[in-house]
Image (cartoon, rainbow, N blue to C red):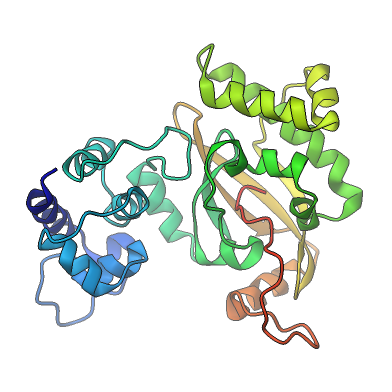
Length: 295
């Protein structure tokens, strides 16, 4: 463990990033060459005091915080691995929620400010999502293992299916399974994450087992979806995908279907954010939404 070197390395990465690189205004008067500490803290979901302590070498960040810092500072995979080694933390699982996201994909996600967008894995684990995706679909889950996959929750948790109208459920079930089969085949034989997910689903869901036995294969490159929002009702959206070179990750974004009222609803969503304005809603917490941007 070398926390003083970790702090120095974080500062060096902070100094090289321009605010515009991460979607922040430059402003006329900046006294630092790159990002300020408070800006990195905001991007990583930490307090300024805590991040300042990290740069001073006075704190050992958790694995989750290291993943957040890697994304905030647009670290390469080697740089990401370096900060884990300096903090004496194990590298995150390749397909888990803390998996590395290519800086270029993060940069593109940051530029999609007027439409819901996110980066997910081929196992349908949400890695990062923009503000509108959170407003549309809810925050990403923080669980690990098979439960982190939306496909797992789709077949094991009825709450996950409230995101779509019931009449669309059969279509999505077939689509999820066909896409998953293609993803499993792309991975090396014996891949533990993929085999564990499939085995768990076959054990817990008769519907999944039946569809898996059909051996249908179809990569989800684009789809028309009807998404149920608790305040705005049903939005009809096109879901588009951009794949990484190895197919392990995809950037997806939602656009309103032409000829529908979803254009106006998405504009309203940008204003509402995560507020819930349903009549009679008193602000008390309700059961969480599915919590993924994959859908």
